[in-house]
Image (cartoon, rainbow over all chains, first blue to last red; front, side, top):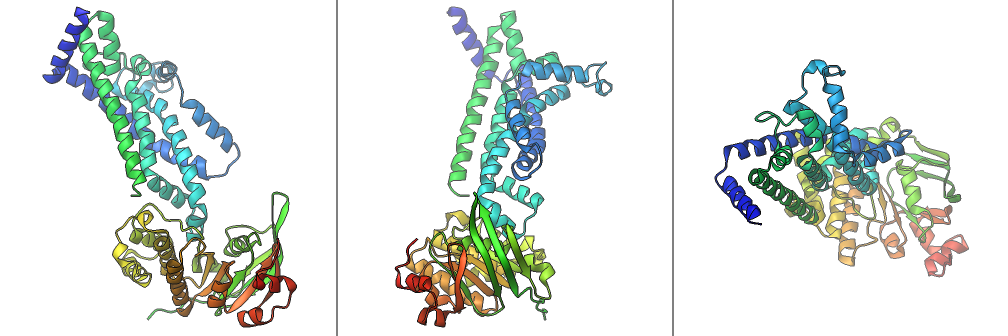
Length: 233
Length: 242
């Protein structure tokens, strides 16, 4: 009990003094996850909207697949990305394995289905309301998709926040493709796992507290966004 | 000086049918709409009025029959018509941006859009709401904005699907005023209603629809003075049964 209390005290100290090692890990985590979510937004939002609007053979199967992929196990994603990026893999020439870029790629694979599946639902609901009006105004599919993504921006922001939550909290994928290399690919979750196994609870707890704070921040932001949407903006 | 585009009218519906759920909802409708007089499609709930309007506007494809734009500019019929729905659909942006959006879709250059947006808002009495989120407006104001948005595109034909069905008398009066102004500016009005008083106020021509069929058509004056069918007479008397 005393050890735990001491660990908490030390961890608060690390946070309050902005410990260099801790700050470095937090910034890298944010950089990796934000880049992954950004890339997932660029691909996932139009993909989800296209599946919602366009009628093509197998559309339902694609929608089901996107929803199913929301629950991809991070370690499996890590393994697949590892195989792709490893020296013998098809993308081995890029030399990305054990770099932050590989971690971004793995999180991108994890987050894109979440963003796309949630975007599909949001856009489909909006399309039910807007279809006749947009068609009457003369909007083609491309214009309609752009309009629906803009008009659904608050709900879609929630989808992106959900994606960010998933990316920042996962450990399996980034551990496998990043290798948890100090000062290179160490992020909050991999550092927590390592420091806990080493018995250095203070740093692990400090990072854990920041991770929880981030999670609360993300959920708080989701509430604010929802309120904004309800206010009719 | 701007040159008025060639007309897309007349519009001819030839034996138009529409089926859904194994039922024939619009049954062999043949009609012609010429430029000029306001045509009101009148009938009880479930008569097929809204479906007919959507078929004419091209939002639905007929199961059988033809919808033909026969004017010299028929090729561009889509660009020269607009529709306002019973429940206004406002984009999640300001009132002015809603009108600007419609103009952008019609390919109106940026420089010309601003004055047209301002003019449309002014015509609808909404200039003070230009920057207000459209969805924050009352339903009556939203419907006026929907009319302003349609009007801004300078349609040759404006389809109106029971535009006052969910409005109070004051808002209805305002909307009818705008419809009248659009008509006087030269736009052909094709409007559905089940409201007899409104039809008497607005109609030049009447198409009376029941159970998906055209029962009677003619000038409003003749229709209300001496309906030719028992169904029309019963509807005017308020005794038409389903």
